[in-house]
Image 1 (tube, rainbow, N blue to C red):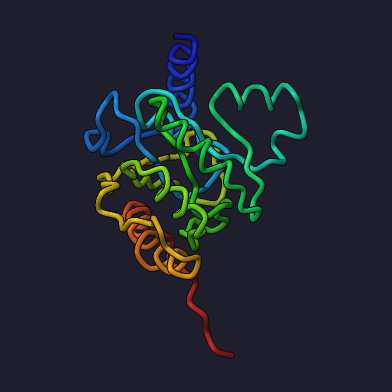
Image 2: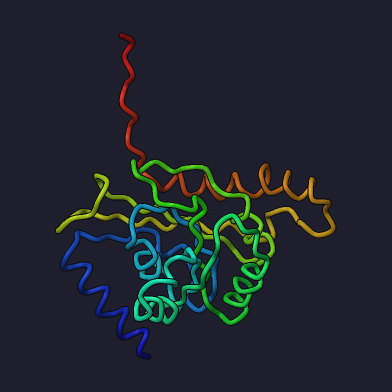
Length: 212
């Protein structure tokens, strides 16, 4: 109840401070946990995705966020964050992620692994595809859109929720060799995830390069 009340207040505050709009909430069902995968534009993204779905969330956050201010670390843990050491291949992350879905929570992943500085969707990490495959939950792509590199007062933010990618539509990763697993992640699991996100993101045009 406390979490619901806090998120209610946060929703009101964000609608006052920003021109905030959500599209496509009809694509997800209330009372059902999903794996949400989103592009990464700002530090506000976890909150925006949490407001776009139903129920509580668990989400990956870089380990460094838990090593500084203890009050901040406690707050994000309460909100559902758990630490991930990027590039470590920590298999415990998969189990923690699976626990989120098994307990009825949603799982939030930012496949790019870092924030985009120009608004364009970068390359997804294979580790994210592994988590999605092992957790075996329906995947919901999210596109967070706003103009410019940073948010400011009354920035227009549009959060688009795409149609879920059924877990059963992804190939199984059981009993695969390391080489076969990596190939499956890169060619069969990561592409639909990233394509789903890109379809919801208004990517800025790259500047035209002129020859001198």
